[in-house]
Length: 90
Image 1 (cartoon, rainbow, N blue to C red):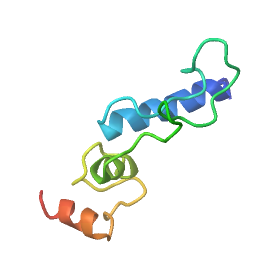
Image 2: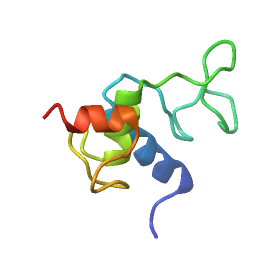
Image 3: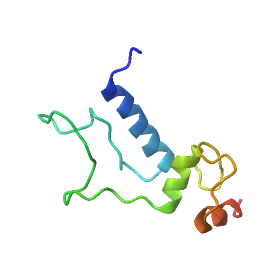
């Protein structure tokens, strides 16, 4: 395919960071500390995953970068309380 696994995961992570609009919360395989061989899970100093707000998650799964604009995995929007709330705010 002409793309390494590290480059592929970096692209996915970068896209999630861009769409989520919540800062750097995801890294691929090449955005790791020098000297380590791999990166399995991203986490803070306590090895907890970085939290994402419901709005960040909606931006990512919709693929639109906005919690009120459905698309991606949910072209008609989500059906939960938070998703429905944001769909009606546009």
